[in-house]
Length: 332
Image (cartoon, rainbow, N blue to C red; front, side, top):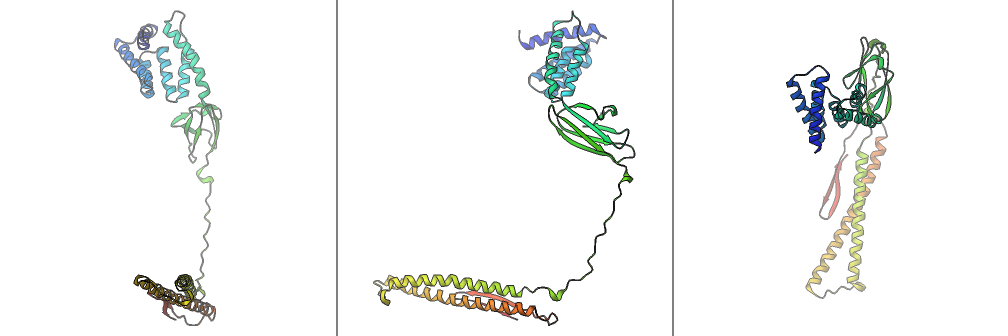
């Protein structure tokens, strides 16, 4: 006989015995409870714990029996609701069964004794201390916590727990804690009255001084320095390139004598010579622009530190770069 058939037979015995033990449920109640319990057992096998918990809880409300309660506790364990599961197992142990009870009932009690021991180390413990009000209203995840249990170890499910505290005449407070299986945490929350905290406004100092426009540094010297630096960089780079081209030409013309063998070599030689002169020209212009820019920057820097009351002049510089030349154009 399979597990499903054994469970169905135990369920039938459960419903019959439970009907005789207490207030007799109606035939409709017994039929409904039987169907709910079967659905719960199927869901439990498929690890659909939420559905199993719902079905066993409703079946137990119609026909109370230890077998249904133990299955309900197993569904709660699967959902991580260890506190409720522990209490369901404990209920079976407190109620017990008669010596002449069906074997399925006695087995349920035996299962509860064994499985409750596995749940115990998974319980988390939370100690909530409230300072301020004498009669605070405390909830954990929306469930009310009796005032009598404040300051004492309170079993709770592991995970993220949201504590909320309110009291008449006090500012509400709360805390969110993460607690692991088997862990114990102590949380202290202090509530204050609205008038117990005085907020002092710190005046923000106002700076009435106006910026001294006459002493503001002019960017013109640094613009000139930048143009000068760019010119020197161009002069240096093209100068190196010109030296390299001169070295190539020297190899082609030993003893300053050049004799291209073919028209193609003659054309290439003329291009190399033209490129050499162009690079030399650009290098010279670059160094000239660099020197002019550096000199202009020094003059502007020195004159800007002179008489603050001297009339301000505007200066504009525009870099000029084109085929075969580099320079600047502007006015003071």
